[in-house]
Image (cartoon, rainbow, N blue to C red; front, side, top):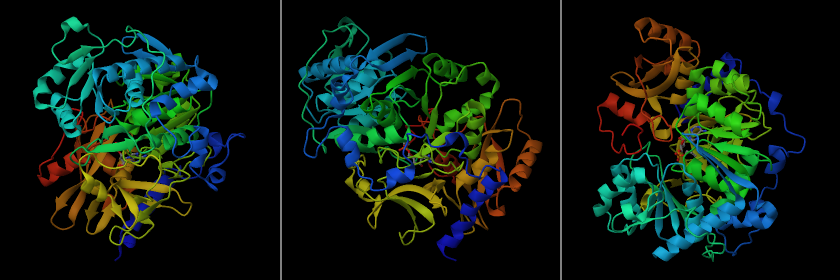
Length: 595
Ligand code: PRX
């Protein structure tokens, strides 16, 4: 049997699941194209990235600097007094910054770094909560030609040390509350010349530590931007490590061309939007679409420096009249868990466009959001390595719930047979290299990057199928796919069926060794409030999913757990559960939430 036949039942199964939920029909409804919005097909015809270059005022060979493009350029376009950042923290402290503030404060930071002796090309780590200095500091680092290396402030000292060592980082910008972690690893990091602390006086600091209060030092009106070019390194992002050692993904300044246009088209930006991206800039979503995309478009963005709390989130949307919301399936599932009652207590009528990224977006989440917000979440697929959205439910496009949509114009995407690397109907997601925000390599690891290419394609490491209309349906990470008796089962289909059960809050389907079938499906499940794990509940869940899954994809076992292992960006790490089943070591866990 060839591979196509092997995987076909499961791509059929995805369609079957949708049909059985009666959500497979196309849903033009609320998502109809707005009259002034060109359709996906129109935009796809004769697409050229030059559109974005022109809109950004860039010509090949020019200086191109993300820090300048996201601040000074907007001021030159007459947006100096427009609000760029509406910031609030968990205690309710608030700050507002205009585009002119972004320009001046990022100059101030760039000037300060240059005076410290940081050189263009050196890595400067941002190790901060979601405070304004993180967002504006990012622009400042880029303006003086250094490379921004944002890391989650929740990292422990070991996770931090591994990444600073690998990158040979020269300076780190942090806060008082995280300083002890830097001090602990300092001796192991000979390249780390400076530790900059944004919220303490110099008197409380030690040698090689410098206080810098962005809003208190004399503002720098004019700063000579370092003349970075298209291929100059900009951002070094460490990937979330669901599949092993974290890798430093190296982005360049030209990436803004793709981030600008994908943000504009996919997030459907309009000049008066108030945009909220839930992601922390320690994750690529928080930089590509939490800094560069919105600011390159001159959009006002709101930032909430606080963990997940459904009530607080809805209050935030209501208070700031958020219109465009970019979130993630984990957050959406948590909101679903809290129920619809709490939503009715808030006026969320400002919401106009919703999008999601990071994990497969289950059909239930799309249906739910249409019910409770009156808008579907639009799934978007991409990676740290792609730098921008590559497959997406385009605004105005008919959404097929459970599908990732179609390739962004200018992105050539397909799926390849994993044995021949030839295009197939189901297999490995592959992209033709050459879009502007594709990373230029992994830091210190050229072989690792080379291994991502086959037959002229970049391989994402994920599996999907493509239906007759050209929609992509996610199956799972390539290494999460379960091989049962030679049949490949994508965890997403099993998990989607499980999430259709009223009792199930979250689920993860992984392979479990089996003497007969080599592997069988095992499901880990957390239950919603009001349900208790029991044999009866297991039976009930099994009965529920039996109607939706092929017999091969049926879990042989369900294990109830308190929580599932996740990365800091909220992705379920099936690898850990799989290793548990196979009694194997789990490897690097430095991005896992509970470390
Ligand atoms: O497995 C895919 C999953 O997240 C991976 C990329 O993770 P990261 O580099 O952290 O970047 C995520 C944010 C851009 C992918 O290889 N993934 C991302 N989006 C989706 C997804 N899986 C399914 N559906 C998605 N929409």
